[in-house]
Length: 329
Image (cartoon, rainbow, N blue to C red; front, side):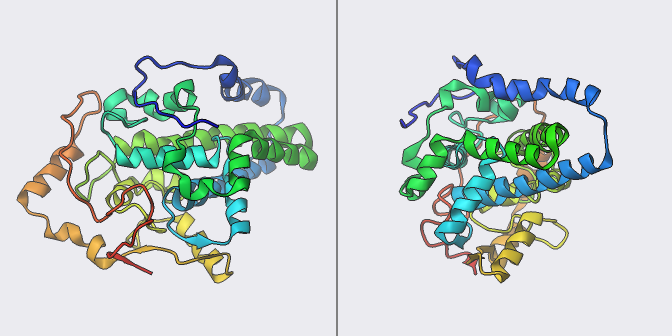
């Protein structure tokens, strides 16, 4: 496994491995004959929802809040379960995913951001970067804290195994119809549901906090992604287990994490402090004007690079590897 040193972002000079793209493209192409030749039953719709929700939790709680940001603690066994569940989403290896996400936070909407819609357009940020062979290597320098676990290194190397196991389970339980609906349909929806956070959540929604990027809060995306749509909250303070910070900001991932904490499977859920949550109330006229201007941002007109400013995170994108004075347990 090599370490990626690729710094070019936005698709300029990008290479695509057509062989590696066969599963991604093929899953989309299978939708047409599948819907035509497999009779629909309502149990299949329920199966799509169930497998989508289960694996979306793997993405949001596993890939994102735990491995990328260390927003809670767990034991080594359940850590492996989270990684395996996340990889049933067919979104590559856990170390690859988390390392690239940490890189995104370091350079969000700047020149080196791998998937910025304001820099490189909607389709690149949504899925183009994910298919580019330029970014296939794992940025080990960004994920050393988890790369010390050999079982995670193995999963990362053979990242297709969990997805194939999940597909096999679908076949054993319900044959081809379950493979199609619980595997193909659910996975395609899961891909695009997850990808909306890279693309749409930097385009549509409201901005409560001044950040160095264009992150937005979007209720519909939060429903679609079990809480990830509160993206402006997240970019303002990244290593919290809850991304919906107010009672009306639904966050299904955090609700499940709370249940798992009662069961003893996870612990030390990092929560946003009131000092951080209500810090927007102290904004002056200039900051309020900046937020108002950003709220009317037009994707097709590229803005000037945001002026860097400090946020409550002392170590953004490393997910709490250093003490965070504004967090409460």
